[in-house]
Each structure stands twice: as C-alpha cells, then as structure tokens.
Image 1 (cartoon, one colour):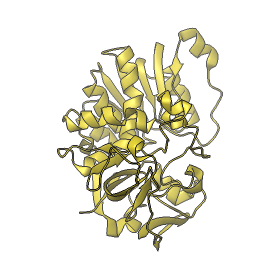
Image 2 (cartoon, rainbow, N blue to C red):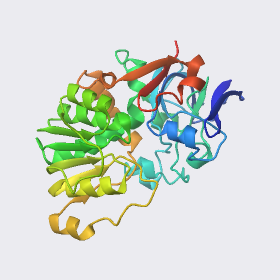
Image 3 (cartoon, rainbow, N blue to C red):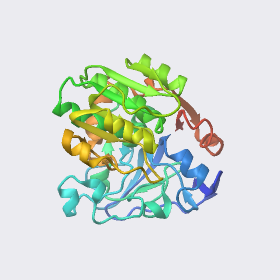
Length: 342
C-alpha cells in the first residue's frame, strides 16, 4: 500500500508499506475521507514530532477486513475513527476517560498520525489503516451521513464541542466568548456549535478578516482585534481561549465571568506567564485544560451532524483528492482541508 509520510520539516512524500493485517480484535479500513487537523500543518511544516511517520488522524473509512474476535463490525461498513487510541477495557476506559487509556501510552498521547510520539500507530492518508480494538473504537455511520462531513468530527469539531457543550449544560443560555484563531477551524466550529446548543450572545474576537467574516455568517458578534491584548474583553460565563499567546491567555482568563468556565483549545508550546490563580480563586473561575476525548464525545457530535443541527461544512473547507495530498497538506494552513476519494 501507499501512505503519505512526513519525512522532514516541510517535506512529505508517498512511500510504500506492507498492507496491515488485523489481529483478532482489530479491523483494517480503507480511508475514504481524511481531514487535516489544525495542528497538522505545524507538525509537518515545523517538525513538532520526530519522523518519519504517516500523517492524518481525522478519518472516515470503509471496513475491508476484521479480526476473528470482532463482533460489532463487518466488511463494507462505513465507519469513523476516534483520533486517540484506547482499549475500552482498562480502568480509565471503564470510567469513560478514554484519552487517558492505561493500555496505550505515548509522549503526545496515543493517536493515529503522530508517529512514535503518538505510540507508533499508522496514519490515515494511506490506502489502508489498522484500527485496534475495533469493537470499541469504530463508530458505524448511517447511510445519511456524508463521509466528508463525518471525517471532520473526530478532532477539531469535537474539540470545539467539548469547549462549549459542558459549560452550556451547566449554564443554559449563557453568553459565549471565543478569542483567537490559533486553531483556525476550532474557533469557528465553536461559534456554530454554541448557537446550536442554545447560547445567548456568541462573541468572536480575531485578527484575521476571513475568519471574522465566517464567524459573523455563523451568527457571532465579531470584534476585529490586532496588536497588544487588552486587559480583558467584556466578560462571559463561557470562554474559549484560542490565542496560543501568553498575554492572550491572561486576557481570556480575565474575560471569564465570576464562576464561569474557560476552556483553552490552543496549544501553548512556549511557557505562559504565571496563571493568575489568586484572581481565579477569588472569582471562582474554572479552567478546563486537556485534550478533547475523541471516543467519549464522538457519537453525540455525529448525531448532531446527522440530524442537520450542525453542518461543519459551513466553515470554509477545501476539498482535494488523495493524489494531490502531498502538495495540499501544507498549502493554505488557515483553511480546513479534506482529502476525499471515491
């Protein structure tokens, strides 16, 4: 089979690999649609994790073979795959903390498309992808759900969902403030999902005119911001920090209303200024920090998409075929990309 491999910073190429064979509890899928995560251009362009490794971790595919012990899935099914790898049987998985699976550990968290940093699992931009623990990991897609829409869900859409859904369940009708565009699609997905989930006012702050225009179309009240971050914006009970900037991080914390909830979705690779713990303590601010748990929320988000309540394609998305993947993977990193094959 062929797979698209990160070879060195800024260099990707197709390489031959052996066709994977499923173990008793595994399945092999043929990827039909693969979305490029907001982090993927940095991973491939800057070499955040050591290569070489096959890329891609947001995937919808067709089952082409299953192991002897797989009971819930069959050849020919269309399925979507959580981007994190988990076993479904350890203490963490039994507690629905799948992203903390005790069986699969890795420096960047066990995941497809991260190479050794993700535990050595395969990448989805390939002719075949081996999926362990198939009965636990795979989610069967209804015929009504398009593969391109489905592949967008496992990471970036789901990350936006976990940033707004639990806080809005706690504070129904609360205002939502989303600041920054470090994860270009995640902030925009959060705008759309907040509206679907019954937020009051949805406010969006960004420096990029294109993203601001999209956020406005999705129903947000938009503030164009550039330059130094202010001390804070008008506060909201629910805030989403998407700045990847230490001063921006402090601004969003300060913009969170008393006893509100702030969820960072940007990854801060550089050290941030000290977190204002005394202020957060005094005002009762909760900060939710960590990776989105793909397996935990996948089914509920896919149901929203399948029911037509949320359409991820309302966020500008480029569609390319698999043959052009090596060139397309690093192009226009601020735009969501899906690779699709027939």
